[in-house]
Length: 236
Image 1 (cartoon, helix red, strand yellow):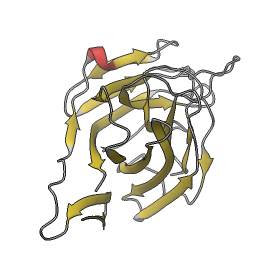
Image 2 (tube, one colour):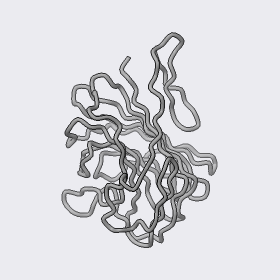
Image 3 (cartoon, rainbow, N blue to C red):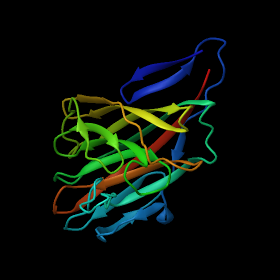
Image 4 (cartoon, rainbow, N blue to C red):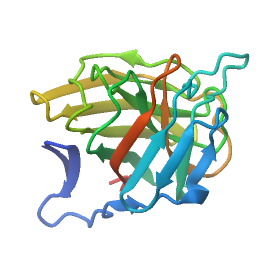
C-alpha cells in the first residue's frame, strides 16, 4: 500500500515496505509547440525547456474565464500530454506540481491543471495562485477561482503549487481538486479543496496545462525559473 507523505512542496506518494512500485515523477519540458493559445499576443519572449522563462508585454493577457459566452479561457495556455488513452478505472489520482523563482510585481494569476485538450468551459480542473497576494484557489476550466487560505506574495522569491486531482472511474474524468501553495516569503502556506465535476470532459486523453492570466491590463514582466512535474497514481 502507498501513502501520501507531506513535504514542503506538497504531497509525494511513497510505497509502504513491501508495497507495489510507484510511478516516478515525470518532468515537463515546455517547447514552442507547447503553446496552445495566446489570443492577445501578450507573450513578448520565452525561453522553453525543463526550466522555462516567459515574458509578458504590457496589456490584458486574458483570463481563465473569458469575457464572452460561452466564457472559454482567453489567456495564454501551454499544455503537455499525460496519457492517451488514460485508464480512468486503473488510476486513482493525478498529482501536478509547479515551482518558479519570481514573478512580475503585478496582480497576475497562475493556473495549473488537467483538461481533455479542449479550451472550453468545464473541460478540465485547475488550482491557482495570485502572484502579489498568494490567493490560493481552484475550480473547473472557464470559471473564476474559489479561493481558500492564501499563502503570500510570490513576486520576489517565487513559490510553488502542489495539486491533487481525483480520478472518477465511473465518469471517465478527473473529479475534485486539492491544492497547497507555498511562498518562501513568510514562509506561508495556502490551501483549498474544491468539489468539482468537469461536466464537458470528453475523449480519452488526459493533458496537463499551465495558464497565466489577469483580470485587467497589467504592466508586463518575466516569470522565470518555471518547472513542472506530474505523477499518475495507480489504484491499489
